[in-house]
Amino acid sequence: MGGGATTVAIKNSVSGYNLAMEIVVQLLLNALVAGAIYALVALGFNLIYSTARFFDFGYGALAAVGGYATFLFYKLLGLDIFLSLILGVLIAGTIGFLIERVVYRPLRARKSSKTVLLVASIGVLAVVQAIIAILFSSQFQTLALSNQQVIGLLGGSITQTQVITLLAGLIIMIALAITFKYTLFGKAVRAVSDDEEVAQIVGINSEKTIGYVFFIASAIGGLAGIAAGFDTGLQPMMGFSLLLKGVVASIVGGVGNMYGAVLGAVLLALIETIGVWQFSGEWKDAVAFAVLIIFLLFRPQGILSR
Amino acid sequence: MEYLIYIATLVCIYGILGLSLNLVVGETGLLSIAQAGFYGIGAYATALLLVHTGVNFFVAMALGMVLAGVIALFIGTVLSRFSGDYYALVSLGFNVIVFSVLLNWRSLTQGPLGIPQISQPMIFGFSFSTPILFLCLALILLLLVYLIASFITSSSFGRVLHAIREDEEAIAVFGYRTTYYKLAIFVISAMLAALAGALYASYFTYIEPFSFQVVNSIFILAVIILGGLSSHRGAVLGALVLVIVPEALRFTGLPSDIAAQMQQVFYGLILILLMLYRPQGLLGKFRM
Image 1 (cartoon, each protein chain N blue to C red):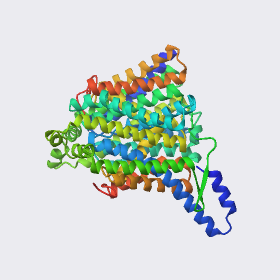
Image 2 (tube, chains in turn orange, red; image 1 turned 90 degrees about the horizontal axis):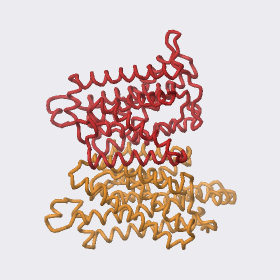
Image 3 (cartoon, chains in turn yellow, orange; image 1 turned 60 degrees about the vertical axis):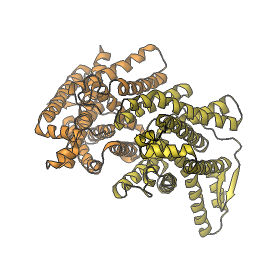
């Protein structure tokens, strides 16, 4: 993530104070980009968790679906980058919608417990990841552009795609906030997540609403996967790791609270970035869970409770 | 013949893992996704003791089980405060942490290189070095674990566990400290998983961290869900089916990496289809 540029920046700096400032700025920029990706995953996870009410592990795989679909159109078929991006997001959304139809809806119709849905979603995760690995191999791939433009910012550096990632994250957050506050659909989603039965009584088609929620959440997850593909690369198992970050972020921020999810994501990314800087990248996942466990023990409702 | 013995030994190891996890998931109703962590702790403790100190296998195995038990005591203390989805998530988190330690504590575990040349079990100068003798040992241990599990479920302790599964609040009203019971069964389960780990390490004489990831915990979970929760026979049956059927994929002539992925598709589909059409599994008594 702009490692080369950082070294140059460090060499050019004169005083120790400047150097320290630059490291801080660079760490913050890195954390913001990672935080934006985690926030997208957390937002989608939060949406599903609050309406369908189960821990959807399969949701993680949709991030990989989005990333690989874009990879297929952009790198393998040579389509335009923005077209590939939109196709990737739509495919992730559609597959998420279909999985809900085929697996989760029948389970809900049978009044299955939350645990049954959770186990089924673990199955979905395993199947989707393995299919991606069969189609695209388990090799590490990247969406990154060869001619990356690096932008200097307050002594740190950030790539063009990272800027786009940040903007995309911000736009999605604002769009979601507006949708849920002002539109009829948003109100229906909120009603279903408050109380599904009462929502049905007042004439909301909760099954249809949940279907749309799965489409939107999966599309957002797909976008996060695409952003991760540009930022760190693609790997069939990437979704699982991203999902865990999203779940941790949304619990740390306060489950069911949109703003909390974003806050949790940025906080988690910041802690991880500092951890990576101080120790090494390999402890990233362990650090995320340590944060989760500490929060669950001392502040189980998260930073902003619902 | 060699191959059949190999399969049978694997079934024994996964049978022990299934029996151990069933005590927590099936009997007590706590969805733990950490079993591969304790399996790994047992395997690494045994391997390191055998390679560095040269103690007897059974001593190393016992020490590995004690270590897994102690770690489970700490983890369980945290876990006992949660239930439902959060129990699953936090236990999964512990598995991730254990895997990170195995992978990154290079000075102790040699990281991704793994530990080679683990010696085979010996007792009174008698070595279980041939595959058939090792299978006998694995069968004896499987039987032992089966008896332990049956003893636990038929005891009054086991009945309290069932009560926790059915209605934790109700049994707490009767004055049972459910936290202690949940903790106790978690520790016992971890120790039995460590036993399977010890067996695994000395059977393959080589271990690496990648055998002890979350996917492996999910595999063990699939074993008992397929066999049927809260059924000891089911746990062994599940191990039998889930070891044999994917092995059959090897003979289809697919390249090995694709065959490995096809196994994942198969496990995943089994979980989905079971949840849809038979959530209690083949021989299960308990529906999640």
